[in-house]
Amino acid sequence: MSQSTHSTTGTTGTTGSSEQQRWTEVDRYFSELLAPADDALAAALRDSDAAGLPKIAVSPNQGKLLQLLAELRGARRILEFGTLGGYSSIWLGRALPAGGRLDTLEFSPAHAEVARTNIARAGLADRVKVHVGPALETLPRLAAEDTTPYDLVFIDADKANNPHYLEWALKLSRPGTLIIGDNVVRSGEVIDPAHTDDGVRGVRGFLDMLAEHPRVTATALQTVGSKGYDGFAMALVTE
Ligand code: SAH
Ligand code: DHB
Ligand code: MG
Image (tube, rainbow, N blue to C red; front, side):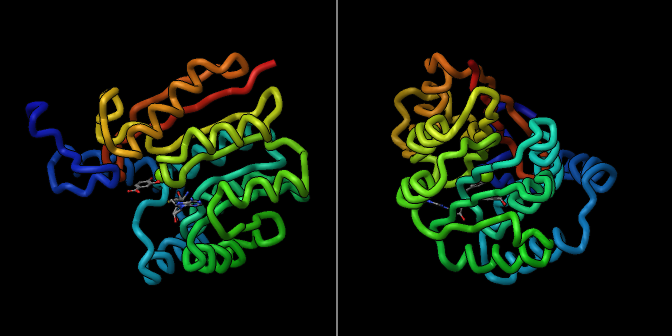
Protein backbone atom coordinates (compact mmCIF):
# COMPACT_ATOMS: atom_id res chain seq x y z
CA MET A 1 0.00 0.00 0.00
CA SER A 2 1.36 3.40 -0.92
CA GLN A 3 1.50 6.31 1.44
CA SER A 4 -1.12 8.20 -0.50
CA THR A 5 -3.67 5.54 0.34
CA HIS A 6 -2.91 5.66 4.04
CA SER A 7 -5.60 3.76 5.83
CA THR A 8 -6.83 6.06 8.52
CA THR A 9 -9.26 8.87 7.99
CA GLY A 10 -9.14 10.18 11.53
CA THR A 11 -8.29 9.37 15.09
CA THR A 12 -10.99 6.75 15.31
CA GLY A 13 -9.45 4.84 12.40
CA THR A 14 -12.63 3.20 11.20
CA THR A 15 -11.66 2.63 7.59
CA GLY A 16 -12.15 -0.85 6.23
CA SER A 17 -8.65 -1.20 4.83
CA SER A 18 -6.79 -4.44 5.30
CA GLU A 19 -4.08 -2.53 7.16
CA GLN A 20 -6.64 -1.31 9.70
CA GLN A 21 -8.11 -4.81 9.93
CA ARG A 22 -4.70 -6.19 10.79
CA TRP A 23 -4.14 -3.55 13.47
CA THR A 24 -7.54 -4.32 14.95
CA GLU A 25 -6.94 -8.08 14.93
CA VAL A 26 -3.55 -7.76 16.60
CA ASP A 27 -5.01 -5.35 19.17
CA ARG A 28 -7.76 -7.89 19.85
CA TYR A 29 -5.16 -10.63 20.32
CA PHE A 30 -3.08 -8.54 22.75
CA SER A 31 -6.13 -7.29 24.62
CA GLU A 32 -7.87 -10.63 25.02
CA LEU A 33 -4.62 -12.09 26.29
CA LEU A 34 -3.31 -9.30 28.52
CA ALA A 35 -6.11 -6.78 29.11
CA PRO A 36 -9.30 -8.85 29.04
CA ALA A 37 -12.58 -7.12 29.74
CA ASP A 38 -14.43 -7.98 32.92
CA ASP A 39 -18.10 -7.27 33.57
CA ALA A 40 -17.55 -3.68 34.70
CA LEU A 41 -15.42 -2.71 31.69
CA ALA A 42 -17.72 -4.43 29.21
CA ALA A 43 -20.78 -2.82 30.76
CA ALA A 44 -19.10 0.60 30.72
CA LEU A 45 -18.57 0.40 26.97
CA ARG A 46 -21.99 -1.13 26.32
CA ASP A 47 -23.86 1.52 28.30
CA SER A 48 -21.74 4.37 26.89
CA ASP A 49 -22.69 3.14 23.45
CA ALA A 50 -26.36 2.74 24.37
CA ALA A 51 -26.38 6.33 25.65
CA GLY A 52 -25.06 7.54 22.30
CA LEU A 53 -21.59 8.58 23.49
CA PRO A 54 -18.94 8.70 20.75
CA LYS A 55 -16.79 5.57 20.49
CA ILE A 56 -13.53 7.31 21.36
CA ALA A 57 -12.53 5.78 24.69
CA VAL A 58 -9.00 4.43 24.89
CA SER A 59 -8.63 0.87 23.62
CA PRO A 60 -8.42 -1.95 26.20
CA ASN A 61 -4.66 -2.31 25.95
CA GLN A 62 -4.23 1.47 26.13
CA GLY A 63 -6.39 1.42 29.26
CA LYS A 64 -4.18 -1.29 30.68
CA LEU A 65 -1.13 0.81 29.82
CA LEU A 66 -2.60 3.70 31.81
CA GLN A 67 -3.23 1.36 34.73
CA LEU A 68 0.32 -0.01 34.58
CA LEU A 69 1.83 3.47 34.42
CA ALA A 70 -0.21 4.57 37.42
CA GLU A 71 0.89 1.45 39.30
CA LEU A 72 4.53 2.02 38.34
CA ARG A 73 4.18 5.59 39.57
CA GLY A 74 2.58 4.38 42.81
CA ALA A 75 -0.05 7.00 42.10
CA ARG A 76 -2.32 7.97 44.97
CA ARG A 77 -3.78 11.03 43.28
CA ILE A 78 -4.67 11.14 39.59
CA LEU A 79 -6.15 13.94 37.46
CA GLU A 80 -7.96 13.17 34.20
CA PHE A 81 -9.14 15.69 31.59
CA GLY A 82 -12.06 14.18 29.61
CA THR A 83 -14.11 11.46 31.30
CA LEU A 84 -16.53 10.47 28.53
CA GLY A 85 -18.23 7.30 29.91
CA GLY A 86 -15.54 6.62 32.48
CA TYR A 87 -13.79 3.80 30.64
CA SER A 88 -10.23 5.15 31.05
CA SER A 89 -11.22 6.32 34.55
CA ILE A 90 -11.97 2.70 35.52
CA TRP A 91 -8.55 1.53 34.33
CA LEU A 92 -6.80 4.39 36.15
CA GLY A 93 -9.01 4.05 39.23
CA ARG A 94 -8.05 0.39 39.56
CA ALA A 95 -4.43 1.41 40.03
CA LEU A 96 -5.29 3.47 43.11
CA PRO A 97 -4.73 2.13 46.60
CA ALA A 98 -7.49 2.42 49.20
CA GLY A 99 -7.69 6.07 50.13
CA GLY A 100 -6.41 7.11 46.68
CA ARG A 101 -8.30 9.51 44.50
CA LEU A 102 -8.94 10.23 40.83
CA ASP A 103 -10.44 13.57 39.87
CA THR A 104 -11.86 13.34 36.37
CA LEU A 105 -13.13 16.44 34.56
CA GLU A 106 -16.02 16.28 32.10
CA PHE A 107 -17.76 19.10 30.26
CA SER A 108 -20.94 17.22 29.37
CA PRO A 109 -23.47 16.49 32.15
CA ALA A 110 -24.84 13.62 30.05
CA HIS A 111 -21.41 12.01 29.70
CA ALA A 112 -20.73 12.52 33.39
CA GLU A 113 -23.96 10.80 34.37
CA VAL A 114 -23.12 7.74 32.27
CA ALA A 115 -19.62 7.75 33.72
CA ARG A 116 -20.78 7.92 37.33
CA THR A 117 -22.98 4.86 36.82
CA ASN A 118 -20.14 2.98 35.12
CA ILE A 119 -17.66 3.94 37.82
CA ALA A 120 -20.01 2.95 40.64
CA ARG A 121 -20.67 -0.42 39.00
CA ALA A 122 -16.90 -0.95 38.88
CA GLY A 123 -16.82 -0.42 42.66
CA LEU A 124 -14.76 2.76 42.36
CA ALA A 125 -17.24 5.41 43.50
CA ASP A 126 -15.28 5.91 46.72
CA ARG A 127 -12.10 6.93 44.94
CA VAL A 128 -13.13 8.30 41.50
CA LYS A 129 -14.84 11.69 41.46
CA VAL A 130 -16.43 13.02 38.26
CA HIS A 131 -16.49 16.83 38.15
CA VAL A 132 -18.93 18.32 35.64
CA GLY A 133 -18.14 21.50 33.75
CA PRO A 134 -15.47 22.98 31.51
CA ALA A 135 -12.16 21.74 32.93
CA LEU A 136 -10.73 25.25 33.04
CA GLU A 137 -13.57 26.34 35.30
CA THR A 138 -13.45 23.25 37.51
CA LEU A 139 -9.71 23.32 38.10
CA PRO A 140 -9.42 26.59 40.02
CA ARG A 141 -12.06 25.29 42.46
CA LEU A 142 -10.33 21.92 42.88
CA ALA A 143 -6.98 23.59 43.37
CA ALA A 144 -8.41 25.93 46.00
CA GLU A 145 -9.95 23.01 47.93
CA ASP A 146 -6.87 20.81 48.00
CA THR A 147 -3.32 21.70 47.10
CA THR A 148 -1.90 18.15 47.28
CA PRO A 149 -0.12 17.58 43.95
CA TYR A 150 -1.19 14.86 41.51
CA ASP A 151 1.08 11.89 40.83
CA LEU A 152 -0.29 11.26 37.32
CA VAL A 153 -2.24 13.42 34.89
CA PHE A 154 -4.05 12.08 31.80
CA ILE A 155 -4.95 14.78 29.28
CA ASP A 156 -7.70 13.54 26.94
CA ALA A 157 -10.37 16.24 26.49
CA ASP A 158 -10.73 18.96 23.83
CA LYS A 159 -7.29 19.14 22.22
CA ALA A 160 -7.49 22.88 21.51
CA ASN A 161 -7.12 23.52 25.23
CA ASN A 162 -4.14 21.20 25.70
CA PRO A 163 -1.69 24.04 26.42
CA HIS A 164 -3.98 25.32 29.19
CA TYR A 165 -4.44 21.81 30.55
CA LEU A 166 -0.70 21.31 30.62
CA GLU A 167 -0.25 24.59 32.44
CA TRP A 168 -2.65 23.39 35.14
CA ALA A 169 -1.11 19.94 35.22
CA LEU A 170 2.29 21.52 35.89
CA LYS A 171 0.86 23.81 38.53
CA LEU A 172 -0.65 20.80 40.33
CA SER A 173 2.36 18.50 39.96
CA ARG A 174 5.48 17.62 41.93
CA PRO A 175 8.86 16.22 40.90
CA GLY A 176 8.03 12.71 39.69
CA THR A 177 4.56 13.49 38.35
CA LEU A 178 3.82 11.69 35.08
CA ILE A 179 1.80 13.58 32.47
CA ILE A 180 0.26 11.66 29.57
CA GLY A 181 -1.43 13.22 26.55
CA ASP A 182 -3.67 11.18 24.22
CA ASN A 183 -4.26 11.73 20.51
CA VAL A 184 -1.14 13.68 19.64
CA VAL A 185 -0.85 12.57 16.00
CA ARG A 186 -3.97 14.12 14.45
CA SER A 187 -3.76 11.71 11.48
CA GLY A 188 -0.20 12.93 10.90
CA GLU A 189 -1.22 16.57 10.58
CA VAL A 190 0.61 17.41 13.80
CA ILE A 191 3.75 18.05 11.73
CA ASP A 192 2.19 21.05 9.95
CA PRO A 193 3.25 24.28 11.70
CA ALA A 194 0.77 26.31 9.63
CA HIS A 195 -2.24 24.12 10.35
CA THR A 196 -5.41 26.07 11.10
CA ASP A 197 -7.28 23.34 13.00
CA ASP A 198 -7.63 24.22 16.68
CA GLY A 199 -6.92 20.63 17.76
CA VAL A 200 -3.70 20.43 15.76
CA ARG A 201 -2.63 23.82 17.05
CA GLY A 202 -3.47 22.82 20.61
CA VAL A 203 -1.44 19.62 20.39
CA ARG A 204 1.52 21.46 18.83
CA GLY A 205 1.39 24.11 21.53
CA PHE A 206 1.31 21.38 24.16
CA LEU A 207 4.34 19.62 22.61
CA ASP A 208 6.24 22.92 22.34
CA MET A 209 5.62 23.54 26.03
CA LEU A 210 6.89 20.05 26.90
CA ALA A 211 10.00 20.69 24.81
CA GLU A 212 10.76 24.06 26.34
CA HIS A 213 9.78 23.63 29.96
CA PRO A 214 12.81 23.48 32.25
CA ARG A 215 11.05 21.11 34.71
CA VAL A 216 9.90 18.57 32.12
CA THR A 217 11.45 15.74 30.15
CA ALA A 218 9.20 14.18 27.53
CA THR A 219 8.70 12.00 24.48
CA ALA A 220 5.91 11.11 22.05
CA LEU A 221 5.11 7.80 20.37
CA GLN A 222 3.01 6.94 17.35
CA THR A 223 0.63 4.02 17.79
CA VAL A 224 -1.56 1.82 15.61
CA GLY A 225 -4.38 -0.40 16.78
CA SER A 226 -8.13 -0.75 16.98
CA LYS A 227 -8.42 3.07 17.15
CA GLY A 228 -6.39 3.54 13.98
CA TYR A 229 -3.21 5.60 13.76
CA ASP A 230 -2.54 7.91 16.69
CA GLY A 231 -0.13 8.48 19.55
CA PHE A 232 0.64 9.34 23.14
CA ALA A 233 2.91 11.97 24.62
CA MET A 234 4.51 11.29 28.00
CA ALA A 235 6.29 13.69 30.26
CA LEU A 236 8.00 13.46 33.61
CA VAL A 237 8.16 16.46 35.90
CA THR A 238 11.72 16.70 37.18
CA GLU A 239 13.54 18.25 40.17
N1 SAH B 1 -10.74 9.61 28.56
C1 SAH B 1 -11.93 9.01 27.93
C2 SAH B 1 -12.24 9.65 26.61
C3 SAH B 1 -12.47 11.13 26.67
S1 SAH B 1 -13.20 11.76 25.18
C4 SAH B 1 -11.67 7.51 27.73
O1 SAH B 1 -10.62 7.19 27.16
O2 SAH B 1 -12.49 6.70 28.13
C5 SAH B 1 -13.12 13.48 25.47
C6 SAH B 1 -14.11 13.99 26.52
O3 SAH B 1 -13.73 15.33 26.84
C7 SAH B 1 -15.57 14.06 26.03
O4 SAH B 1 -16.43 13.37 26.91
C8 SAH B 1 -15.88 15.56 26.04
O5 SAH B 1 -17.22 15.86 26.42
C9 SAH B 1 -14.89 16.06 27.09
N2 SAH B 1 -14.61 17.50 26.99
C10 SAH B 1 -14.61 18.29 25.87
N3 SAH B 1 -14.34 19.55 26.20
C11 SAH B 1 -14.14 19.59 27.53
C12 SAH B 1 -13.83 20.63 28.47
N4 SAH B 1 -13.66 21.89 28.08
N5 SAH B 1 -13.72 20.30 29.77
C13 SAH B 1 -13.87 19.02 30.18
N6 SAH B 1 -14.17 18.01 29.34
C14 SAH B 1 -14.30 18.28 28.04
C1 DHB C 1 -11.42 11.89 19.60
C2 DHB C 1 -11.07 12.19 20.91
C3 DHB C 1 -10.30 11.30 21.64
O1 DHB C 1 -9.93 11.56 22.91
C4 DHB C 1 -9.88 10.11 21.06
O2 DHB C 1 -9.11 9.27 21.79
C5 DHB C 1 -10.23 9.81 19.77
C6 DHB C 1 -11.01 10.71 19.03
C7 DHB C 1 -12.24 12.85 18.80
O3 DHB C 1 -12.63 13.87 19.37
O4 DHB C 1 -12.53 12.53 17.67
MG1 MG D 1 -8.39 10.23 23.56
